[in-house]
Length: 331
Ligand SMILES: O=P(O)(O)OC[C@H]1O[C@](O)(COP(=O)(O)O)[C@@H](O)[C@@H]1O
Ligand SMILES: [Mg+2]
Ligand SMILES: [Mg+2]
Image (cartoon, rainbow, N blue to C red; front, side, top):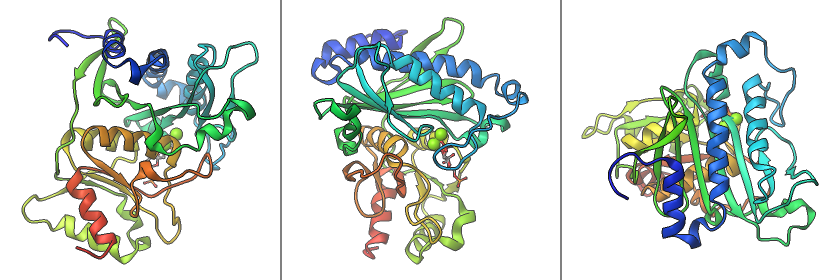
């Protein structure tokens, strides 16, 4: 790729030319998600105004009050993907069941999972939020609304990524050939290549965990966090803003580890495997990092349910490998 300004559109064309087996015919899915992200970004930037109109009165499958923007982002993701003839079905954090493609539209060979708005508790306090997505090739014949195609291991992802709506809007994705980041230039309405070939540092100086849950952690997690906090050579700092995408993105660029472990109240933690942990685990492994639930790699977990939760420890190789040693009492 020559130096200079490269738009996401041009990059995707180049990637499809170089790796037809990877991007295949699902490049348009990535383009449509990027398009939805532009629309969502526009509304996120008016969040305060939208929230003046009050929140929806609907509650999602997790019993969480749906903020207006959650619902809005969810509808934009569905509208961007339901008619392009590439998608057999979708699964969203905001929908109890698999989202079927309307009869009037052709079905495709892929299924898409997404968290349309991650970090929603931060919407009305102007803290970065995000969208997370993953793309699988259908393994079934497409009957039963492709429901079983969602229960593939993350290792089967053909593409994944996230959008972060922060001081700028960024689109970060991979289709198995490395991780690339694009920053939205609102003046031209294009995502421009700003972070080519992202690699996460071997180790960092940041750990991200909600320490208010300290009293619920098991002994090994407490020991690991104490070890990191007192690691003389590096002087770690704590950074946790309660938006998984934002915490993950910062650690991806700077190095470090994000932890949302299971605890005495929530043995499987809070984050969802299909549309939060797996897509970010795919990205971090493509960038040279690791992601585990404390026992196995996130991407190797066999999903059983659409909205199942998983502990998530994700980031630089050294911090995650060290965590696994503590979990196995090998430290
Ligand atoms: O407030 P807690 O328990 O630390 O949880 C924070 C986590 O919850 C989340 O907001 C859950 O995601 P959603 O906002 O998409 O439900 C993550 O983004 C964030 O990392
Ligand atoms: Mg989320
Ligand atoms: Mg969400």
